[in-house]
Image 1 (cartoon, rainbow, N blue to C red):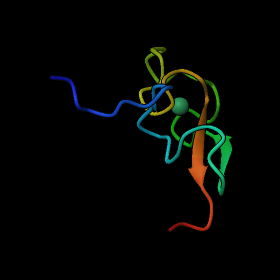
Image 2: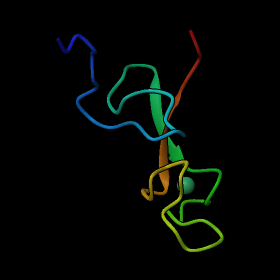
Image 3: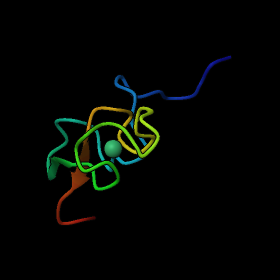
Length: 60
Ligand SMILES: [Zn+2]
């Protein structure tokens, strides 16, 4: 049985909320500074190479 709920869009470790979530906003990834790559030119593990993360605003 597969009872696990999976998000429709994969979240990166740096994402705090899904895109479009009320109270959240897109921001530049603080790890790669929006470059999408880390120091060794691999896709940034924090943002998944997008250079952006979804931040929760206001918190819960
Ligand atoms: Zn990044």
